Length: 303
Ligand SMILES: [Zn+2]
Image (spheres, rainbow, N blue to C red):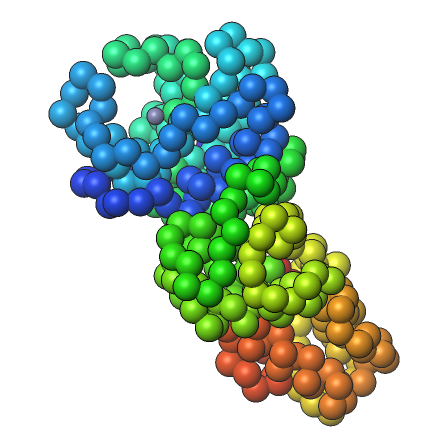
């Protein structure tokens, strides 16, 4: 639990919401949607009300988390966001005529005199690092609650689809270890292939069409790694290796690919383990060499 230090102002409009801001909103809707939480917007190319300064909404780094006026949970959430701001990459929160900012990280809540009093929403800003890397799963790990928004809110997408929903699906596929390459918002052959493999691994019809059931699986948290320990402690292993590290890889791969034939967890890195490691590396966009080195370990352990 620690407070973010520093403040990166907006320079000019970028054209889109950032992945981190979308993730924060998705988590918020999942955790508080049933209590009146709603999406009051992320990307908006405009100035701050009553000033000529570009709003962080113009860089897609600010979210407006809509709350019922006076809801007790809203202040509690605002306090939690500040307390965990370093973990989440949050640089500013404005709520109910008060502001906390990483410009004055230890000053706590100060009076906010802007034109908009922010009584019906929390304005939450991310640092660039937070905007690039925050995921709904991270928010859930730090704050608890339910990360998944209502799957029905997502359009069914397939080969040929384009846009933000495709980009989100690509990011979620990557988070689950089925990276389709660059998250470019274009549903091409690589995305179709990744979607099919993901569906197969989750016991869904592997048709490459991302509809409500596939969305629900994509928006769920990826399988947790069984042992969260530093990758530096893990040896580089490949075919022919034996021992506990091999056993660990076999266990993780079985958890990742429940639809594929189970590997025998015998600590012996044979042909089947080699093939499964390569399968995982291909899906994750790693070099496909069957060698479990630092990059593959990091991916297997959820880093
Ligand atoms: Zn705002």
